[in-house]
Length: 219
Image (cartoon, rainbow, N blue to C red):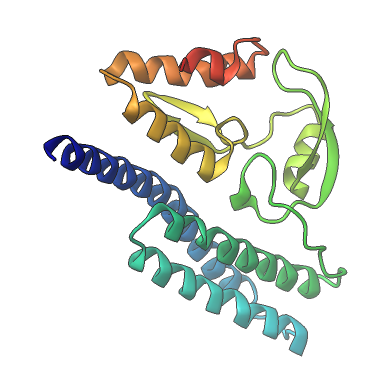
């Protein structure tokens, strides 16, 4: 009886950790979205937006408000991850306002920028090689596409895994960060050493190490 109660308590703690990790990441997204929507308001104050642009602007604000409410009301990691689509939709409507204001076609509904979803929807596919890795085609925002074309580094979002900061695309987004935190918490005596091993696994993957994430994490 006591063993079952302890296991349930341990599982509750793991789920609580998953929720905290997810909420922190998505709350950051919602905060940045709020700043971007506020900037959009300032940027368009002197513009005579057409009805289509005004409708996209209204939807961006509504979805931002919805995302704020959902984050505050969340109780589980699943609650939080479901908010990602709301934020993604708001980013699209923001991008649509900017495009219509500037006399450009409406953007396609594409995946978020590979390097940082806070950049908004991707605008084009480019070939990119990770450090020590092979070239691959990725979807990036217009700003990162320009940086890569100029031989510059993209603006990569970093997330904390263990005691280190890991590029967003290696952490595999919110779901990947949640799973990494749960695996770390479930390791006996995970502490600082375990955190370093987990973080190093992602760094090894970035450098093309064959051990990858699974090899460094162990069973």
